[in-house]
Length: 515
Image 1: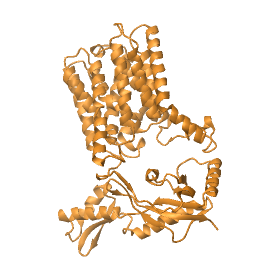
Image 2: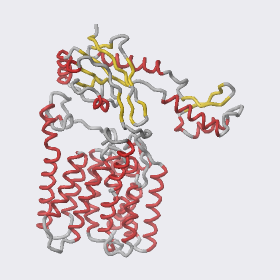
Image 3: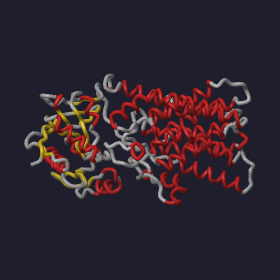
Image 4: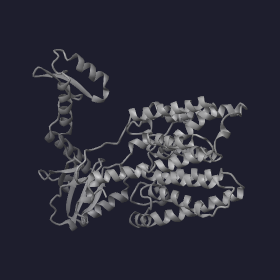
């Protein structure tokens, strides 16, 4: 779709897909609020609030898959709650099978959803009814999840296993021992809490410092408020004060809380990466409202819950973080083709850790491609395989990022705004200097040029494209030296590639063995 359809149409369809998250979020709220007179208007409002949480907003319309797979996770939870709500009635087993199929498909699409599969299993066991019926329901859910996961992704895992010796390559290589990757478990542990105190206070810590769990700041106040509300409810129960609003909700609320808590604890222990919380953030406003009503079972508690959720929504909207956007273009991608005389005898090395593999889809298919000096956990087996590839194919090339005038264009736009505001005509540039101190995101300093106050990059003068690309070639050369390769002098050319209207040029160079 992204390569064949117009860019704006693809974005629209992704937006529609993610907008469907409203339906299971509202359906879950509808089940929990059963019997409450405000259910008809409150359930959709709580679902809409879930769509306004930080992680959900950040991925709206993009392909990082957390929003997309959350649709199947929440539909599975919704199905389970509906089955449990009718537990007293005779029900066929196909409802449990559907719930299992949905969660199995979510795990097949993105393996990190396994935490939600475990949470769903706990929710099924926590439901009403005799333990035998609950265990039977769990067996049906598990069976359906496994069958659908195998049918959905089994062929792909088999192909990866045949090619690389590990169906989840390079993950879990301590188990599968593929010679093409480091012999150990691979995981990004940068985001995990450290020590007992951090584990205990983690929702509060990452609420006030969002970059503890994300590369970009995904501001969301819901986790701190929910943690405080849950703590107060737990404290009251431990103190023996059992009166409250717990009986004012449908019994399936217990299953939803179990799903939420188990999934969250697994997330905190295994990943602690904010965007993996999308499915929980969608139902967090519902649980916060229920907690507020349970703490104060009166109209005042309802208003308190509404105000708390409203504040969380405003915090998320005001601090809306995202993963980057480019302006629309009729074709979402375009990559200028290099000249390759013998593609079937050629190897192209992608040098460095910058995202480059997206270009491969638009380059000749008969060429062999491999990454070097990237963040991939190379092994000696990987390097041996690479050496053999280079021996088999004498035409060898390297690609790595080029440079564009994006920084210069940014400061040209900023200085145009400065001129429109009349801040460029002050003799001492005092107001503009004050702005640069207050607005840290500008990352700029002030200098006087031709009698005008202008913004410049904080690290000094703008670097020319030629200078920047020369530095990138020198960096690529130093990385290739570890593989016994060097760039052929004078062979590098810069080719265009773009995503939307964003320009991402790349350098194409011939390779030769190092002397």
